[in-house]
Structures are given as C-alpha cells and as structure tokens.
Length: 496
Length: 134
Image (tube, rainbow over all chains, first blue to last red; front, side, top):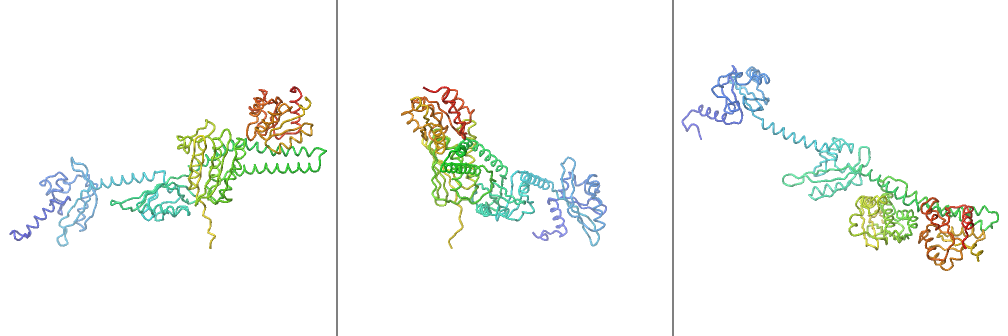
C-alpha cells in the first residue's frame, strides 16, 4: 500500500512503521540521548523489565537499570563511550533480573545513531537468549554425559565413517592399544588390526555400510608395543534420519584376560589328565625297566653262553629304547607351549602323538585303540598344544564311557576342504537330555572329584578358535562318536 | 606227586619279555614253568590242570582282566589252591588293593617290577616253605 495515497506525510508514515517494528520485534530496544536519558523504549523492553512507558521515557539510565547491573556491566560508561567515540559495541552479555521475574540473559549491542558526525543518540538492543543459553547448556550436558559414558567404558568404543576411517577413539581404546586418539584419527580401523586379519575387518565394515547385519567377530589388534591383543568386536551401523548408513560404531572387548584364564584352565586340565595317565605311564615304563634289569642280572651270572649273552644285551637295548620312547611321548605332550602360537601342522602326526601318550592308559583300562589314518599327512594350521588337548579329552572321555573295557576307533581323513578326526567308542553313550549340555562349562556326569566338567567346553572353545566344528553322535548303550572338522591349510600351489 | 606239584609254576603275564625273564629264571632254579598271556586262557588251563601247580605268578594288569579279579576266579572256578604271587609294575606294596588282597589271603605275596632276582626267589621261597599246600 502506498502511503501517499492515504494522504498523509511520508515522515508520519515512517514514524508509524518504526513504532510498529519496534513494538513487535523480539528484542528490547532503548534509545538514549546524550544526557543518557531514555528517549524511546519499545514494548518488549517494557514487558521484560515490568515498567510503564510513562516512568521510563525521560528517565536516566541509572533509574532504568538496577545498580548491580550497571556496576557489573559498566553499561553507563559504555553508552557514554559510544557518544564520545562514535564506535558501537557488538554482542556483549548481561544477566538482568527485573523485580519479581526470574533471571534473564541478554546479548546486547550499542549502536550510535548519528546526525552528520555527531552521535545524537545511542540505541541499546538487547536480545533475550535465556532459553537458547539454557538449551545449549542442556545439550552440552547431554553431550558431556554421553562422552563420559563412552570414555568411562571398559570396552573399546570406536566410531568410523562409512569408509572405515576412525572418527572417535575412547580412553579404553587408548589404554588397550597404546595409541592416542590423535594418532589414529583418520586412519582406517583395519590398519590397526593384525595384517592377516585386516581383510576381515574391511569386510565387516563393508557389509555394515551396505546395511547388512554382522555377527560378533574376533579380530586381533596390534598395540604400540607390537603385541597382538584379541578383541571381540560387535559392530553396528549408524544411520541418519532417512535410514542411510553414514558410519559404524565398533565396540570391542579385550579378551586378553579371558585368554589368560583359559590358558590357565587348559594347563590345569592337562595336569589333571597327566595325573590320570600317570598310572598307565608308570606301568608301561616298569615293564621294559623290569626286563632290562633282569637281563642285566643274567649277564652278571658266570655260566652263560655267548648267544644268551647277546640275547640279554638286545633285551636291555630294546627295553631302554621302549622306555625312552614312552618318556618322549610324555614330554611331547606335557611340555607347556604358548597357547596363542599358530603354526603349520600335520594333523595325522598330532593325533598319533596324542594316541601314543594315551595308549598305556587305555591298555590299563582293557581298551583297544584302533587308529585309521587315511594318509600320512593332512595339513592344517593351529596350535598343537591346544588341539592335542581336544583329542586327549575325547579319548579320555571315551575311556570313561567304557569302565569294563572296549574299543576306541580313531579315524583321520580329508573330506573336500576339511580335515576330519573321528573318535568313536562302544561305551555307554550319552542320553538325549545330556547331549545338549555336554559342551556347557562344569557339566559333568562324573562323581565329584572325578571330572571338572570343563573338558568339552574347553574343546569347544579351542575348535571354535581354529574355525572348526565339533559334532557329536551318540546312541545310548552303543557308544558315541565325536567328530572334529577343521579347515585344511592351503598349501602353496605347486602347479606352474 | 607232591614233589612234582612243588616244582611246577604257572605264570600269567601279557608282556612276552617279562615271560621270557620269568621262564629262564625259574627254570634255572629247578622249576617247571607254564605260561598264559591273558585271564581267559589262564582260566582254561587252570580248570584243566590247576592242581598241578605249586605257585601262580599273576601280573596285576592283564589285557582282559585285573590280576586280583583273576585270582578270585581261579579260587572260585578252578581246583587250583596253590598260593598266588602278584608281580606288578602298577601297584606299590602298601597299595590298598594289594594290602586287602593279602589280608584276605587271596594272594600270598607281592613283588614290584622291576625286581631283583634274589627278591623274587626269596618271595617264592617264603610262600612255598612255611605252609606248603597239600
């Protein structure tokens, strides 16, 4: 609407417009003259300060603001300075509390209103930011709380972008890996993993970025000291409001302590098994010792023939050889080896070594051990000590299933890309109700003191670590078969 | 008859070399020796001619039966009343199984493998001398 058509002056129109704008903007406005008296105050100011226009216009700045605020902000001095210098002030802050109203926080600006070079008026613009400040304070608190949750977590909490580059790295991640967050930000998470497992981490992140679900994964990270730390990772995608994946959060649990505990358990189990086998081994050793001892006593007799002399010497030699091979089997088995060492192994030799050390015990229990090895060599990768523990457990369990003697059949063969070991007995079998529990820790049907109940649960853990499977097949009163399937080691391609 | 009875010893041991030792040693000292490698065969032999022997030497751990259990079967299923000596690398002298079997009179003595020939012969002599079976 054109103001001139209304038949009023342009000046009158602008004054009306000015008053309308001033009356409705969400800022408090005050205009001071050079004597620091209020010339104009808008409605917003009057409402917030609970004042009437009549008592405000013409009042001095000292009468409008409480003394405390004036002293604290030096508002009077600042306004005077605007008149003196012609320079305004931007975005200063004041906390103002009108009588009977809760404290408000303002950003204020002082603007010189000039006529020529002379500052005739100074405008005070106050922006009430109380809610904004409170909101951002709340947001900051929530943020701080979340951050402290992440920082206080005992588990590694890492976030990456959709490409797998690290964005955040909590204190636990620093403590466990030794890397400060500044050292890893922008790096790919996979770069911190054990080289042979990097592609696993990449694959997990790739799958998550595509929105696919991922199970728990155990992937080692390499600490600053070069040590491998086993971590159980649980990764989930971070989605934006429209559901697109823009990052991944990786929560990792340090398994070092659990591994150390398991290693300790393994060792304890092994010692317990050695205790069980001690009787068999002693018996087995005493026979060749006895024969050698007797043959030596015959040699001391005066009236022996040269051929008997030779026969005695041979018996002694054989006896000593037998005894030392029993001891060698035992040493092979009992020697503690680091449980995290993975090496190329021949599964047939490994099973055979285990059978050799257990054979005396089986013999004592009137149990015949039949081994069927399809070939001489089946290559796998693994930890010899741990795998021996598994087969030893199967054989000892089979022995316990046959208190009146019987037969254990041990077959080792290759099936497609798997190495398979079967340990079968013709013992008492496992009831259907027990079969689901046999891999649970501490589950045992033995009398207390006879079994810890940890054997098969440890076997399960070990075979899982070797990326294999255990299957059980059992018919009550007819016997059980435990089958282990392990991935074959890829032999270097000899074909050109 | 009595003289023949005293001179014949029956050995049950599954270890051929141990049998070799016992046979040579006992023959050298004037005994006749018969041997079996397991409980089953031993029982067959003793059922037939258990009365011929003056002494039975039993290994404690046989492939099909415990030596002590075999001793019990010999008494219950055969006519053999000869004293029995347990010769074993598995037990030790104050083992409860050994002690109990001796207390009940099931076995008359125990010799640990490896043994000195003197000790074995001494044990045999002790078992045979004081109360020879008729």
